[in-house]
Image 1 (cartoon, rainbow, N blue to C red):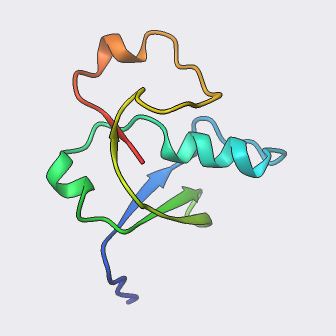
Image 2 (cartoon, rainbow, N blue to C red; image 1 turned 180 degrees about the vertical axis):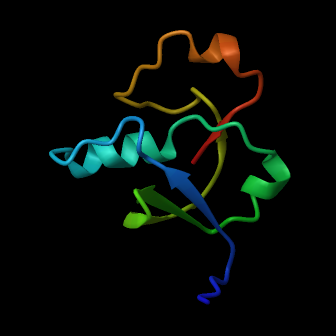
Length: 89
């Protein structure tokens, strides 16, 4: 068993992942808006982008922001209507 310390968040990229994605596209689907408690999110130092049990990339989280507060080339039509509180790094 592998123990990861400090804490990390695993983000499943399967719904939007494509094999031909650029690094910035992968970053944007990984850091995007997620429904997670702010107290849990702020404890995480790393975000793992995971696809079919394979870690695609690991990102260091420097800060958390409310969903939609920073620029992204990803557009999720109607997402903000369905999620009341969401966070991104």
